[in-house]
Picture 1: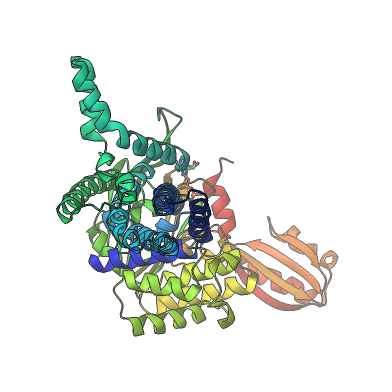
Picture 2: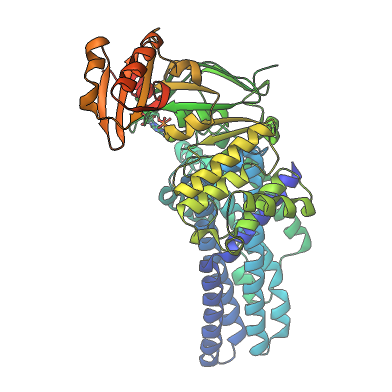
Length: 257
Length: 314
Ligand SMILES: Nc1ncnc2c1ncn2[C@@H]1O[C@H](COP(=O)(O)OP(=O)(O)O)[C@@H](O)[C@H]1O
Ligand SMILES: [Mg+2]
């Protein structure tokens, strides 16, 4: 079982690496960081903050696009091009495929985030802020964890829906996930029972991505505590496990076209 | 011995339309038994339901009714897949992998050791006639026929007891077809069971021990190929060839034997008669006209005739 999951994860990572789109995005982020350095020159005294802000925000944004794009396309491509026919005629369970695919994508994201983080760190060294170059890594970890959720959502949708719709829905979930906590607070303040019920529902069903927002604080040199990171890690683990379990239940019943 | 494939009352409805209201019955109560150690031909016109049956057997789609067993295990049992091989119709593989990498990946899914995987991959790629220079090319650069060869190679990675091939000859040139035909015949020699669908009847005729003919999702004929092809009426047809004589010189034959047909051939004439009791008369008449008998052969109903008869209304 683990043997299959590992083989599928490794093959997924290989596919992503050989897919040139990924390289382009990484290069793009490095370019953006270069721009940040240039901007930093203009805003005298605040270079390090600006670089951190732009670099980490770009990392998140590009990470989300990579997660959605790769998460949706790699899974639906296997269904559409019928490469799954030969996979599932071998002693490979559908659950093993989903988990293997997911882990391969997470590994791809990890490498990406690491490359991007290194880019931002180097840019910070360049503007003379060695302390920020080190302290951003806690926030980088949070970004990576957020991306693993986005990927799990993307795989869930592509297990039963079309690629375009899956991408759109995943993007919406990401947006809502960032606002769900504030919306719930807002609804609680309003005191309307219906609003409380609806936003409460959204709050508990959608991932609460406000836990992962740390870029602004990171620009001030702050770093999430180990306890906080551990808590968010646990939250991510539970949420992803539930998402994958739902995906597997749906995918097991699917007739492959 | 137990049947390798056992299908009972298998049905499949495809849902059509946005609300999935409309249903198309692709398979309707199919019963089929495949005994071990033979090459079994699964015939039928386009859309007869061959691929649907095979996809159900492989667990890729789920039946609307009925059951099926492979090697004694229900088709929902994924573990039995370690003992079977499958090449889909128009196989397609990961673009970005080389042929050897694909074989290695699939070997991993069967839990083969790295050294074994390398050996098996190279053996099989050579066996399906793929040139060595193409082994390390990315599959995106492969032609349809090359992909078909890779498809057959990958179906044998685990040295399976049962090999299921969906249109294994499609996309192959005449040389390729011959090579794959020999490979499939070799599988029977090695004691494997082969279940293959095909619309290339000459291949079926050359290879298969038993056949089943499917039409609109139901079985219309099944049995040993020779028996199906043997003339249904007692009067078998024979064809007698002669040279050194013209058709015009043999008009006495159709006069003497009802139903006999004489045709002019470049080197002489050919005569078709029904019933072996008439052969002697024909031979005498040829001698009388000064010709030489070259051959006397029984005429079998061709698989094509049988196929057309079973799969059309005429
Ligand atoms: N995914 C599908 N959705 C709807 N109808 C299908 C699908 N696949 C096959 N069919 C229909 O089922 C019937 C049998 O198809 P198939 O099994 O592919 O036939 P064969 O392989 O014998 O040519 C055809 O009428 C075909 O149109
Ligand atoms: Mg078919």
